[in-house]
Length: 504
Image (cartoon, rainbow, N blue to C red; front, side):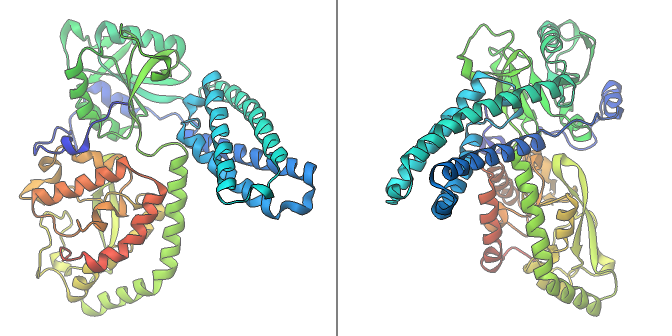
């Protein structure tokens, strides 16, 4: 997979990312105004498929145990079966077998799954030997479970493939896609998509920096919607799932320039190989219909991981609201007793994919000095901040009402902190000061994040400070996992006590 190095991409101070409100062509505005078709979520399909697969393997393992040894000897076998099934799910995801594209394949999918199942069984055998528990497990049961599990997985995946193909033919799994590029290459790509992926792809139009005969305004019936930079604003205003780049591999500079502009988008980016004379091995390609493509970038959090993160957010938010409700009630009373005005402060912030969201905070400033746009950073001994406000800002208690934003689905528990649109460092807007700034919005913003637990919270009065925040945010996006989220949640209260010198 081609990747943009986040560290290199934010070294400049002049952002190439398109700011909010960029003017789009009339054709692009017309596409944005079209109703969005309701299609089935790939994350939900993947999640249900994984649950069914896990239950199938667990029931198979336990059924063989009961048939061979009887139900009375299950005290040791049941935890072994459950641990093995959990490990199998992790390995199946690691080999990328739980994706819609993988479900559509036959030999590739079955090969990955059976190979992964064999790996799981080898790890189980090694684990039993290492913990000296091999004598407690029947070798016949283990071998029978492996063989029958492999057969069951092949049959299950064959059925799953048929179902996914059926849903694809009905148009229930269509991805909204755009093409970057134009001219004859794009025309050939469109023809191939129509021939082999018409049920899978809902093509919206094209974006290309070239003009004139090399890139006409209409290609195979599809309008050119704007320049490549316009695609950032276009994707912010209407759902886009897939970007297909129609450029030759030899045009390295054009491809890299394009990727530098588009890596801020929370979409899958694929480089079409339909015109390339350079051939790779079959494993190097994925496919859009019958069109071979090279994976350049993936959504940071996709498929079943979206469900994991959603469940994590809701569980942590509800638990925190219950446990911290006395603190929140006491804070509300203290704010009311000290100064007149509302308890809560509502402010616009940048959300997922640069959308504007309204977040809740406990009011920490005097009512007549509120700064709705955050155009002036809060500094040490700031006269706008009340006595209660100083305390709740240093301890981040003022952020606790954002738990309601989490329940509404606007924030995550962990993610890049949402910034106000007019926030500045050294009199420059954040997205003007840091190139690639909008890439931090490829995931949903969070109440806490990797930057905060590393001490980069509070005042961002210099470009270096906001660059450090963005650096940490991009590291989090590139290395996301549920365990990483859990670690950040555990470390947040520790960092509040030890690294709050910049919070005013």
